[in-house]
Length: 169
Image (cartoon, rainbow, N blue to C red; front, top):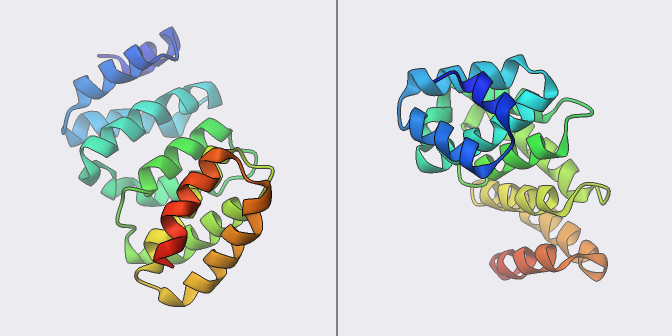
């Protein structure tokens, strides 16, 4: 399969699912997808981020060699919301390697606090910060304060995730 050609065809669940089926748990095929994801252009990077998220959800170990690249992409200015959303979707289900914890915490705290970010990005960021707070309990008060200060103006999705996380803080 030519992953890049498939991504040029359409941005659909059918295309993304087909790519994920092709990749399976094969690190070489996932490497092909990550090459397309990294090379761009933005439209292809955005389209590649969806099957990337789907594949990593099924096979989390596929992401291990690419943490640096994915987190670097998340930190780029002016990155498309769809790319951020899919990276964060992945990170909320992952054990972040220790060497990236500080950078991930910094990025996700900033995204959580930024009310101009789409709700899904803020909600996934909230989950990533909460997950890391299990290892670093000293960040729990800051996370709790950010969530509570956002609640009066929050969407249903934000309130739903907050209602699951706040009692655990």
